[in-house]
Amino acid sequence: MSTDGLSVDEGIRTLLLLMPRMVGRVKRHKVPAELQSLALAPRHLSLLAYLLFDGAMTVNELAARLEVAPTTVSLMVGELSRKGVLERREDDADRRRTIVSIPERRQGAIHEWLGRGAQAWRQALEPLTPEQRRMFVETLLAYEQALSED
Image (tube, rainbow, N blue to C red; front, side, top):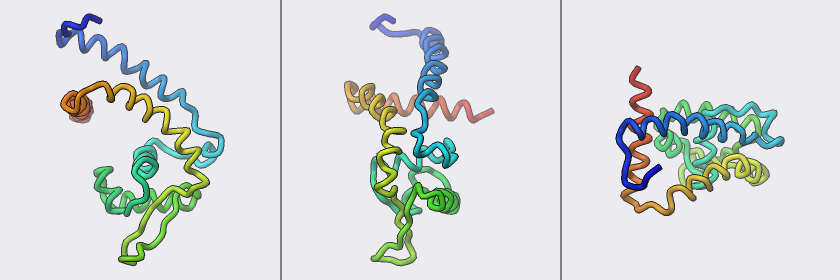
């Protein structure tokens, strides 16, 4: 690929070849044995990633970040808590709020599962300027939005 730019069609051709390879490589990252029996679904990945990389947070904070209703997050948290993947506790400052976290005994396996992808993104994004990173992320978001318009 030349460094002097791409036409839209060249970019499309390159990405149409690249995306299936990327998805295939991501799918090859096996769920650690410790987590395999828990039947974790793709919808759990983003929730677990936020908790792993940003630490404990409330159901409402998770819902805002995931862009879903708090009831949806509450259902997922309940399901994952019953499986021992998450812990819930009351917020000492406000007993109406629930703080959600990954128990220490699960953090290693979840990091093993999600950490490689995070490291690959870090490697790809660090050389870019903040403006280039924003453009890249906004481009992926626009692509996702265009796919959902069917």
